[in-house]
Each structure stands twice: as structure tokens, then as C-alpha cells.
Length: 163
Image (cartoon, rainbow, N blue to C red; front, top):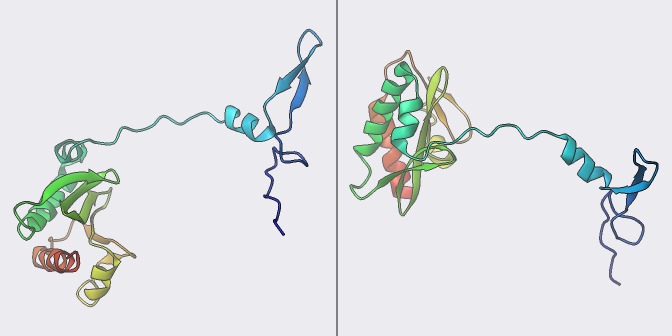
């Protein structure tokens, strides 16, 4: 036996959209959009921030101290990826791609991050004890020396896993 499809709040008993009405200034009845559409109409769209289209544009927008740290991370990555690897913007942040995206990196207010994937972070968890990590990212504080060797080892590991 076939189950009836679930209905949304804007649908009536027979699965059709409900028409709601309201009185206009002249006293005539006018159709209104269903409640879900009225809510959407009331919500103002927030202005979208434009994402950088190139790595150079991303770096130009990063404040000075973070930019120098981010460039150190970038150079560490570049030193171990194949020469044919390209730099792209992915998820609105810079990334290195070779066949597929290998690693992402980004600047934030108090740190720069490397996104080498969760598996790589798990592999290096003992060496990353002094750094803040989450499932897929490592945070490098702006006021500490950059662990270039560790970054290179993680990128090499990611390169080996990417096939």
C-alpha cells in the first residue's frame, strides 16, 4: 500500500497549496501567499560578501601580520606539492589542487589554519599536541614560530593519501 506524501504547513488536506486571503484597502478580498512564503518575503536578504576569485586577491585582503604567516604556510606547501599543482580558491579560501584538492589554508583574526583533512590530523596527533586542532583543521597562532617541517610532513602525507 502506498503511503501518502508528507504535507508541508502550506498544503491543505489534499496536498494542494492553501490559498489564503486578506482584505485590501478597498474592502475586496485578495489572495496572499501561503504562510511559509510570507515569512520568506519579510526576511531581508543580508548583503553577500564577495568571495575572492584568486589567491592573490585573498592574500591582498589579509592584514599584514597574518599575511606573512599565511605566506610561510603557502611556501611550505608549495615546496612539497608537485610542480603541476595549482592554487585555487575553494570554499572561499586558498587551496592547492593536484588532480583533486590536497590542502586548504586560511587566515583568521588570531591564527592561520591549515586544512589537511581529518585523517592526516589523526596521523599527526602526537606532533600537533601544542596546537589547537579540530576535526579537519590545525590552528597556528600568529605570535609563534611556524612549524614549517611539520606542515611539509602533513602535506606529504596528504599527497600520499590522495593517490
